[in-house]
Length: 159
Image (cartoon, one colour):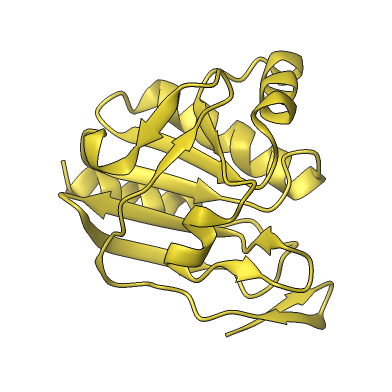
């Protein structure tokens, strides 16, 4: 799959979009380990390259708002930023959702989302239920926002 940035080819990835969701454990913005298999289903995983960019900020704020309104869904955000960068951003933006750091691309390698040219994760959204990927949206254009409504519909139906 080709990923573009502002319409120009940027990277090629081979994302995992169906089947068993590979388990992982990463540190959140408070330094706590978060393990996918220990989270209650359904889970919306919001993946983005850099919390300190405009589209990533919009995506994270939007899913934070949705998390407040959908307590029966687990929301998890994942970026390449360090836990410290994530904590600083959350404090500045008043965001209280869980964001985990994939600074070493451990998650990104498992899910085929590492854009090698920039060592960043491709923007994507997954819905996981009982360890299975039941929805995946990998955005081919880095500057586009995900389809929030569709992810929420799939997660709501999985409750």
